[in-house]
Amino acid sequence: MNKNITVLKGDGIGPEIVNEAIKVLDKVCEKYSHKFTYTEVDIGGCSIDKYGVPITKEGMEKCKSADSVLLGAVGGPKWDNVDPSIRPEKALLAVRSELGLFANLRPTKLFMQLADSSPLKPSIVGNGIDLMIVRELTGGIYFGKRRTEMLDGEKVATDEMTYSEHEIERIGRVAFETARKRSSRVASVDKANVLDSSRLWRAVMHRLADEYADVEYSDILVDNTAMQLIKNPSQFDVIVTENMFGDILSDEASMLTGSIGMMPSASLSEGTLGMYEPIHGSAPDIAGMDIANPIGTIMSCAMMLRYSFDMPREADAIEAAVNKALDDGYRTADIYKEGFKKVKCSEMGSIIAANI
Ligand code: NAD
Image (cartoon, rainbow, N blue to C red; front, side, top):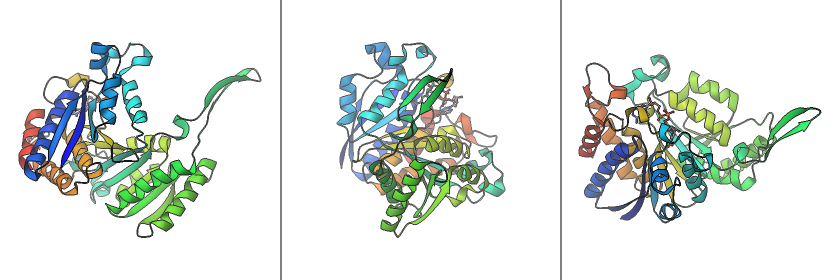
């Protein structure tokens, strides 16, 4: 299969980790007879330096016309004080909105080889953690009307949380379809005991649950979910929730594994176009030192193959290659412990590529 990938390496460790991910993708092409063509586009601080904007119009068009987009990370202290309208992160929000990326998938998987990096006790993480948070990304309170006004002599601020049936249904479908490719369980998180938007959320999810009768479905309140994620995270398969609840719960969940450099993510549109990126930032403190962990970016490529290119066998091969590298004792500095083999970012990429 031929696929066009627009590559946004970005700033800080972005270029280092994306180069390793491309090494792995090239090995997948060689082994499974695919052809991936990469088009590089500047994004974030490096684009501000060259063109005065965090992404150019031409760059955005190259994202829209691609089969998928691979992102490293953007930002760094050099651009902290630029005009807010051209901050590096503005480019990310623009890409998400122009590409219609309404579904954010964040898997939280504990690699058992790294179980002692989790802040939770072995008695809790011993059964493994393998859950997927499906977060609605373009609606809810972050996109609702907001205002601050004077009422009765004091300031009053209002943020509206709005959801329409079609917005809930399309994210629900992503969750149910995702569950079918995993352990077929969906937990829908809301605050239906208080919020109207949550009651509508729940009603639409119930309609979908009837339609996807092969998927086990449950409702859970957001406050209970926050507690259950710590008490018994292995009970979850797919969690689907609205924008703000998802923002908070996905950060909570990512900490369960204890290693930010390992976690991938995918942002999906209604078609097959998606953007894939590690959850961490540009790590300016270690940029240019060849010590970053490229696994979050490499695992993001596995998600790209699974969700945008419908290549589950190739995605499995990447995940198995990462597991083998960890089984063989290779560790980048962030996950290194005595007794293991410390490797650089570029060495980890080569080892994983060789395992494909
Ligand atoms: P960060 O995720 O970049 O770094 C936090 C800590 O984790 C640092 O100590 C860093 O060295 C370490 N770390 C991160 N990724 C690592 C990896 N792959 N391997 C090893 N260690 C890793 O968060 P921050 O320091 O708060 O932000 C730095 C910059 O990144 C800021 O400009 C911020 O705005 C930006 N940022 C960008 C994105 C994005 O592009 N999606 C996301 C978050 C932050």
